[in-house]
Image (cartoon, rainbow, N blue to C red):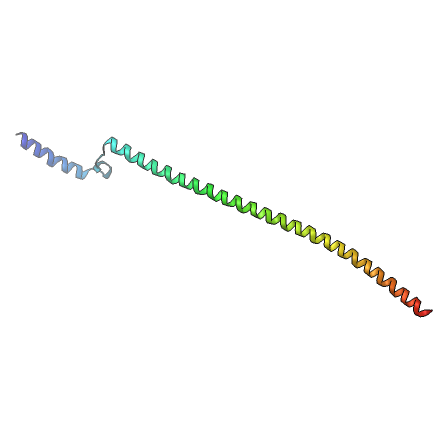
Length: 115
């Protein structure tokens, strides 16, 4: 009798499970297994974000190094520009003096020819 009862219970429970919604058909896992899977997933997520943070920090350091190098190049170019500006001003002043001397020399030459 017990065997028949068990067999009929097994057959009916299978038929009932086959008609149940999908959510109810899934075999529930042990709580320990679910907790372990959640912990593994959280650990993987943490590792993934830690790697992203490390990469972002590395990118920041690279950008800061490039920025420092660009600032140094800018300062060097600024100094070259200032030096070129001073040289231009000095050369323009020398040109004005040379033009003045040329005019004076021409004037003296014309006066010498007139005498």
